[in-house]
Length: 281
Image (tube, rainbow, N blue to C red; front, side):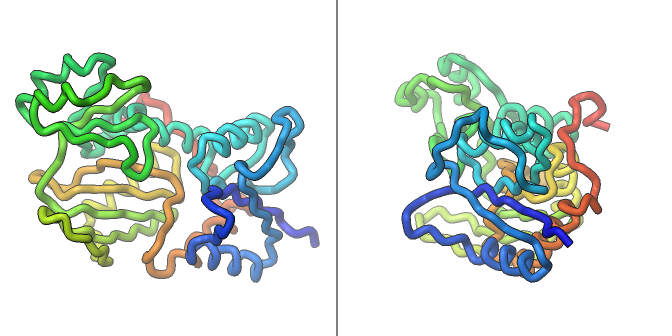
């Protein structure tokens, strides 16, 4: 019987790279299940884009780098199966698009704006704290909090699109992780003294679970994570990303491996990017 071939598209960070413990355990479980696994780091390959062809049964897009996303697009348009789907990952990377889609779908997110001229934010900054985010930023890179209008003068005019949101302060942060329909949460207590904050697993409320699963339905994702803040009116989604680290999530690896197995064997529905029409229903 021919082995099902899986290809993991991973991010390259340094020469001593090793997968995080969750990913390493996923590899081990899938190998025991009889899958053939290959991994690749786009940054360490030399490829001719037109020569790239579909050679595996399923490609697992773990990396968030622009290079892997571009190559994933080449494979997608050749008919490759990707998890999460390529179009869903590309749409999720764009914070402006994601903010619009989640708002239209009734997901609680901060009030948001976009502009190419920061001077137009002066009136808003006089009324509330703002947070400026690169439209494709990750890990908090390039994020800027503006507490009052005069601080805008020190912000360099953006060369790339920026999402501007009302800053949600005061409550604890939640790191929420989803595998199919399983939802987990880690609490990150708020801090005003600069001390390091320690994540701790916490129960998932019915509201957080409902919001988390709605995000996956809207964005066409099955392996994803959310950053949420417990605001005055309840939990608010402040970020969404595909295939997070799942570090510290109990039993994450077996759940991820089972989901990948089902997806590879086409035992679960194909995820697709929803259209804007009807999302608010």
